[in-house]
Image (tube, rainbow, N blue to C red; front, top):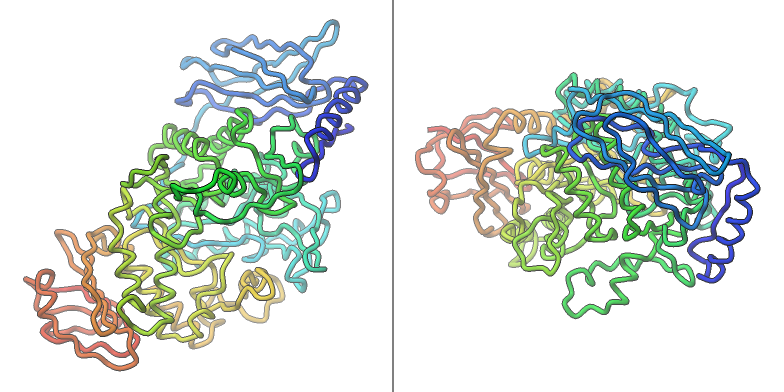
Length: 632
């Protein structure tokens, strides 16, 4: 079928209009058909009884549609500029039974039909959410483990290459490879998996700086309703989630609303010129978040931030278009219901339209009250971060997002590890950041981290200093929030983004056939790597089994002379974390902390299992964080 490609981004509005008119003329010459309906199927018994079907095919928008099925009412049919589209508003009555109905379209003597399935909802686990008792492990699927080399590449896809020797091409990791290592995650103490996007990225190679690069990262969707075949497809994703649930683990979906890939099927045949954010000439987002919080901001700056494109090969969706908004929201609900994902991480959150995001978040929360939603808003101060989450500040716009990735605490931890102690430096940064938690309705819902797929590797940033590594890891696993760990950080994988992101997205050693080393096993790791792995494992397992540590109240004391002390406590247990960030051993006199030490005279060092028979004075080695379970 010939597709009518509307130009975008670089096109001027007049040129767009001409192209649309030409498209209308060309469509009339094609044989009418319905080639796809999105969502691909739906369920009876959903709380929201409304459903909008996108009906697509040559001249599909020129037909009058009807449905004859008990409980299903076709309320309205919408047409758009492109005659290949129709949008059908349906309502599903509460008593509607699962089954298949016929969608019938008529245009004079012409008739189109399409079967559409309404499924019964299952009772399998879904939308369980993640919370402070969890420890999230972030995986880049293409770079983790390859269980099926037969799906590494396909000749009928836009990118036909797979080559592990080339850092910019696909390497062949897949979902079955991840599933095969669920035991590894369990051993480490991880309770949830966050996968970089698994949705189809059928993108051609792009050229950057003279180098061809693939969309192995997953952030350029080309078909919302298909998991990428090179990862194993929809069936492999469902099996992975079911296997994870069987082990008591959860799965976080990585969602992208802001943009799609330039090879997305509906970009090739754009429904209307306002499906995308259009500019007279290509306009990139400024990446400057300030206009979202600045009471003096120019509207032009706000528009460029929100409506400018992320990159030229990722068209920017216009979420103010009601059909775009419905399409994205329904896909989110479909994904949770069909695959059973437990939480929702939102890419490039701050670039999305505010009202759309609140509407989408609320749709998920209405249908799945226990789901957790946390977005990526890459900002550098607490005020800006609070703007994109449920907060206590009198912003003109109030976000309903429950959580967010805590970039501000990430920056503070890095400063604490790389700066000498001072009034506003070193560990003072952590204390000052947490001291501002009152801006969040619930700071415990923030997701914390030390690095991720877009950043320099943690171990490299701290100068490959194992003592610093342990300090930062201790803070990650004992401070407030929901901790997440980037794959390989537990085995000291390192590198900087220079010259490209591929440098921090290396294959996990042992995940691919022919690997000389297998870091999934203790025997395959070096002594230093095992020291790091076992450190994370011990603390993560202790955290998992200690509610006071993961969900108790946090009480922190102002750092003095490079010593930072805080407590995690509930009615049953108190854990003291005492950090000496200096280069010399410290002798900590504890009189100052008596409000939290009252009733305790001894402690067990959680990391060494050594016992302290007095708490009057505590010796802390240089660059060390002690985790002490207090005892009467």
